[in-house]
Amino acid sequence: MRIIVPILVMLWIVVPLRAGAAPDADLWPDWQVHDAQSTARIDHSIWQDILDRHLILEKAGVSLFDYRSAKAQSRSELDAYIAAMQAVAISTYNRDQQLAYWINLYNAETVAIVIDHYPVESIHDIDISPGFFSSGPWGKKVLQVEGRSLSLDDIEHRILRPIWKDARIHYTVNCASVGCPALAADAYDADKLEEQLDTAALAFIRDPRAVQLTPDDTEIKLSSLYDWYRSDFGDEDQTFADHLARYSGLKLATWLSVHGDDLPIADYEYDWSLNDAKP
View 1 (cartoon, rainbow, N blue to C red):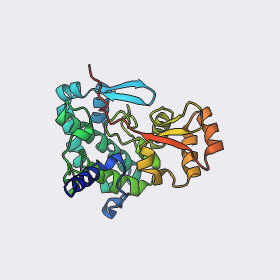
View 2 (cartoon, rainbow, N blue to C red; view 1 turned 45 degrees about the horizontal axis):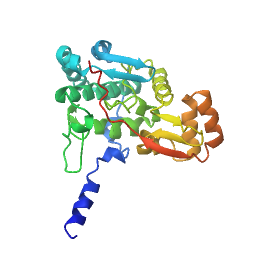
View 3 (cartoon, rainbow, N blue to C red; view 1 turned 180 degrees about the vertical axis):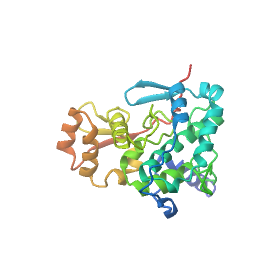
View 4 (cartoon, one colour; view 1 turned 90 degrees about the vertical axis):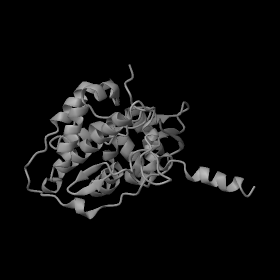
């Protein structure tokens, strides 16, 4: 028993962090630097070309990526785009240019990591993050921007979330999984951000993998995204319900107007299968 109990404890501890929790938004102040007067633009056309060639839209809010063809046909372009983005002096741009930059760079690097390890069943199987209790690729320093080494976690939790404090960002950064908000068909554009953020939120929330009522309409099932990042969407049930209602269809919005102050949540679910357009 003295041997079995510690082993069981260890097995419980090493459950991947993203299966039950998420890092806090922890600002790195250096990345707050920007030039509000700047009119300079960042070119994301290479990333757009890659999306045009290899992203397959299944339906509204659901997309798959053809990693096999991208690996064979577009790896050099993807590397060139990521290299160009790492060479950008991002602190000299305005906030909108910065937001589009970080989202596009995050998504492009995620695709690159999957391609590096393809074929793979889930991004969780790409176990390259440092530390005994880490899983997946998110903790590995994979980028260099303005002399700083960055991981995907750094971009999401130390730059995007704490600087912009906009819950809609969760619908834009793609984790290469079926359960994740879809990889957008259009590269994020500083001139269209409000429209693109709303479109991403609406597309996810109106899909059953995000929110669905139970068959008897007494409870809702939610994506685990809303469990991991609940504070970003609103700690209070009503605040969270208002966020969902803003982008939901009439039936769900009506249901939320009745139950929003004390949400009856049946379960949280998430599909970590790779968002792969397999032939």
